[in-house]
Image 1: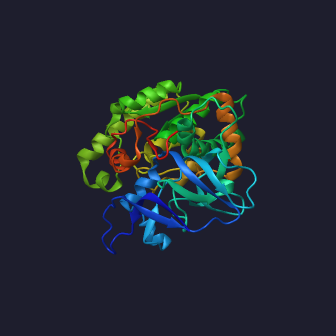
Image 2 (image 1 turned 60 degrees about the vertical axis):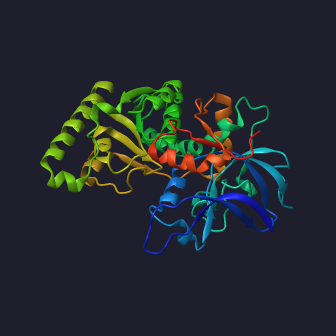
Length: 384
């Protein structure tokens, strides 16, 4: 049995789904199985799934896992402390990108996330934890990038890599490079959207990101991506019920949507957006679909502002729109994504404040309020 210090999420009271507070306390876990490794977290990246867990939305993950206490965290860089007998691809002392899957399907796609909804997993908000060794990918030899950058890479960039492969492939099944040499790829969302748009740019597309945040503008510019100021259409927040009962809201919404679609036509010379990366969800899905070109692709691996989508199926069929939904990445994609990142410099460039171990609750609060001022909020556990 191992015992470590961790920031722990406790089960909520039945019928009272109030947000939780992380508690710093001792946490124990069993000895290594032959295919596992004991690791220490070096740097971690705060992810939306961690906030979902603390807010108990859409579920209380402790109840879902049948465990009274859970340690969150599935994105970061770890160092190997000990390996099980069957582990041969990593050795003690290696720094590794952590692949955050807790349970796979038969083809290596994630079903449940480590440090989130996968029972029995202990996340990276622990000074030490044990993990399935196949989830460990050593940093490239003599890498040009810091462990902090690789920690930021480990979830958002792998998500973007997997989603982009499907979305771009779907577009090219209908329109060849000869048909459409430089597709317009737009996006709104967070770090995964930024990573995917940067990838689109590297694939010869004209990439544009929408934001109202001045701090994020710096990160977008650093990635070489065009920007649209979200403040031009702040009323572009669709709510079906309010739209039906409040004429003034409906009027403001339609005006914002009209301005947005006029800008789409202007920026794309009337063609529309070929691939729209939408990690926001419900409030913008109506505008996203209207912005799509014929044979366009709506793609996402997230639902930051809502899980439900409404559309007119007939219109989507007539316009030959493809809808792509992915979840994190396939295990076999990780090595190629890491190699591409190292070779081509596809990597987080601007990293915000590094939160210390004792500042984890502050990080959780700042993320919710938007005070982290970065797409890549990071924390140090056992810093180098």
